[in-house]
Image (cartoon, rainbow, N blue to C red; front, side, top):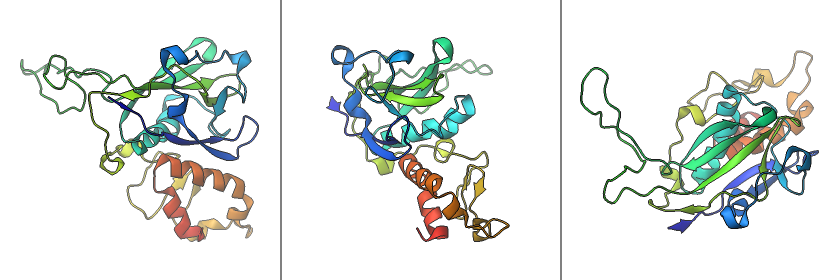
Length: 249
């Protein structure tokens, strides 16, 4: 059994400011005894919630997969473990992403529909009844969606568990998040360092840095550029390196 190291993630300074601050999710996880339920919608404020930047203002399958989950998985990778993320609908359009250690549920072998034999699948999950590999990890926390504010947030105190067991801490360099979770803001995700598309701006060549009227887009959109840089860095993708190459940042 081991306590989770810091899970570092960038959030907004407050609900009214998109200035960036870094927090440790692990410090918010106080378990069943010390934790609290998520604040009710009318009681959510800067005193009890960490807010994602206002640009993270949507909640659908595609947005969660490309924008929110990569940030969560990258933060957990930096802390030395892998997680699974599952969305749960709540009342009045609210919801949450349930984040659990990949060792938090049992692996079940699936029977082939064509061959009546069990398929043996390689898995990192514990296997029920398997000696030395039967312990489920209790680590978990939630990231919530506020439908009234159209914002994602983390409670400053929640009932999640920061304890891991049944597996060892991993070197972050040995954890592969997978292609679908390593880059956001683009349907056509790139696997090389030659280009990156962020939102509606494609920085694959320097000709697109200036608008048709000669306006310097880096200057015009500098506040959003800074936010994108910080969030790209926290997501663990190659956005910072690519933008640095094009903007001499």
